[in-house]
Image 1: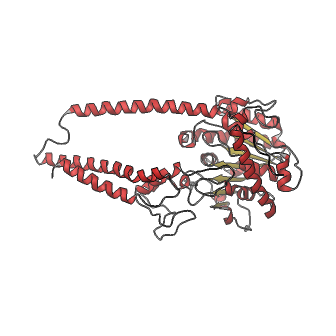
Image 2: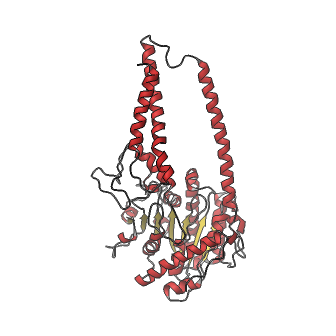
Image 3: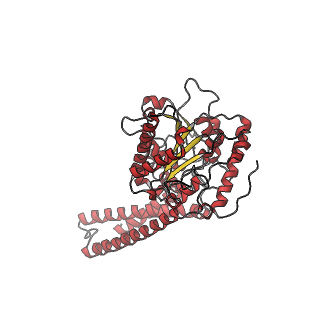
Length: 467
């Protein structure tokens, strides 16, 4: 059989097999067009690659036997190929730079409902703040502009608030270097009196600067406002485009925690130090506290909650002591009613069916623990889903693009959407007082706050909450 025929037959056979195998169940739903096209695209890519390799191999064998000239008969096709490839790469690089610049500008632009300076002087960007409103960026303005109100505390707890919440945010544009941004954050914490509060929550934002306000809402409401929160941005691009900034972001967290530790060491009384990271923010904080000999004891951290860590929690985050004090749950129903001995200090909230958590390079050639051969599956992992070398990796990669499908106020515990879990998990992780009736009112108010926040983002007049 001629080399070309060998390549065509091999490519068609391999491509058809891959396409057939890639029609199975995935972790999250895909748009219909993506679902229809995926087998053909993946099968085509693998088939072309296999066909080319088979054809070249057959050509080499044929040439060795004296029946052909080999796979390369002239240098001209190679030069043409290199030229075309270079042009494609150059065009793609230019297009990418233009797209990234546009995305960064979008992250700097303030939403219509958050473009006015906050009235409170206890948040960054407000009166007396060392950080200007425009320096907060889109996500920072949203974060500081949605601090909970006294009526939120009264509705949920039935008590009057004891203080006005403090929210500090330093955007990546507020200063040129990491130490300067940390210095601004510390200045804001001192200015607002954050170290006189009962709790101080340090949140690592996602790549775009997104800092989830919901866990902060929970803390503010259940402490009656006797708390402060701080976040420092390290970029303006979505998390999947910010993986290269994890080291810098972790450095930011370490410098901030060191500065907080030093400040607390000279005070007679200090707030409880709490950590929160979600998605890439979780990966960032985990990297920060696991670097070198340092751990949570060094920073005086009372509790840490890390949600939806990309690739799942790393095995080497803590020393043995910290690892023994951790708990991993898929949903609040798995939180023990009582704990034997000391309450866990480190909490991992990871959905069994979250593709962001499940997607790892090892998935390409190794069966993951969450798809065992005995057929057992975790919550929201399809019973018919099975591991197929290479194919499952590609499916999980596509899954990550559709892992979150959010409708404001419609909380889900699905994929990379953890909103339905945060009320109970934040309460438990941080040891906040909350009975069943209070928890029900808290969940209701969290949903209302998200709807109001979404309306402001869209420039709409938010409806009033039930109080």
